[in-house]
Image 1: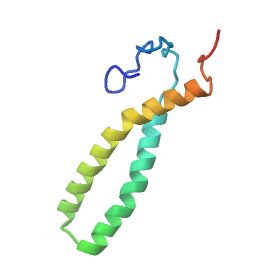
Image 2 (image 1 turned 180 degrees about the horizontal axis):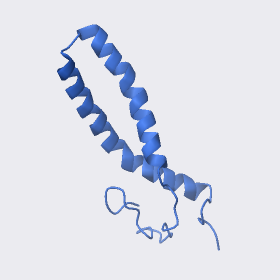
Image 3 (image 1 turned 90 degrees about the horizontal axis):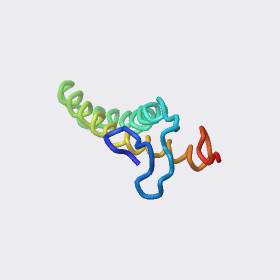
Length: 96
């Protein structure tokens, strides 16, 4: 469905379904922030209270973790949003 990191193809290469009219917009970014925040906040609190690392070590480790998790989730959530729009026949999907 994606031809680059986040670019959605105009048509599906397998079935030919037109994908050019999707409206994912900022939805995948908001979902990524929501998920990463809810996963990393308890972990950073646990790591700080349990291990008491140096603040720069804690900041560096969790910055890398948050960025890596965000980069992993973003294209998958974009595909999820486009797939959900297709399944619900939203924004021109399924029209004659």
